[in-house]
Amino acid sequence: MRLGRIASPDGVAFVSIEGEGGDATAREIAEHPFGTPTFTGRSWQLADTRLLAPILASKVICIGKNYAAHAAEMETDVPANPVIFIKPNTSIIGPQVPILRPKSSERVDYEGELAVVIGRPCRDVKASAAKDVILGYTVGNDVTARDQQKADGQWTRGKGHDTFCPLGPWIETELDPGDLEIRTELDGEVRQRSRTSLMLHDVGEIVEWISAVMTLLPGDVILTGTPEGIGPMNAGQTVSVTVEGIGTLTNPIADRGK
Image (cartoon, rainbow, N blue to C red; front, side, top):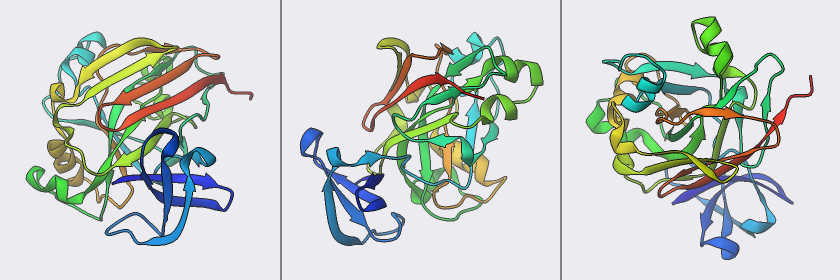
């Protein structure tokens, strides 16, 4: 199932997206998409709605340096265990919403990633059982003020600005995350291209590691790390991240007004 969240003439709703291209429809889900969704009977042409970030997360947990080639380009060692950090949920935006470069940063980078969406409350999940607690997968962009990340010695400010966590365009529930292509384009030029099979720690390992530290709640998002090829974005440009089997997440870049 392809789960989304839309703004329609009738308000905001979780939906099941069915069909492709201009013929796609959005069927309204009653209440929330967790468990076995039930439907209200209302539907819209997807083209007549606006896609929002597909989930409202209580927290976004991220994995740093999860591709060896990315660790190398950052001139750091490959970590033996997953390196985790958190982005605030106020950093989440949906497709086509501008990523705003803060005036306090001189370099804001894209980082295309596979994102995991948790489907039920869980703690101490074994890697072999991770699929039982996952709702599905979406596309993420771990936007980073690179100069602030380096200056601070920790990552909260550089990763936590408003608009620094684009998610979308929807959640794919039927997907094997083991070997998917990830591609990031800046103004149509490919800047990142890799596969999830090159992750140092796979999705199951990541869920086990994080859930040993904190309880995961329905809707929580895990960003699984970015491959090599990171680079800066400037106002007026457009960044697109594509994950095989899910779709493409596109956002324009702008300078923050204040």
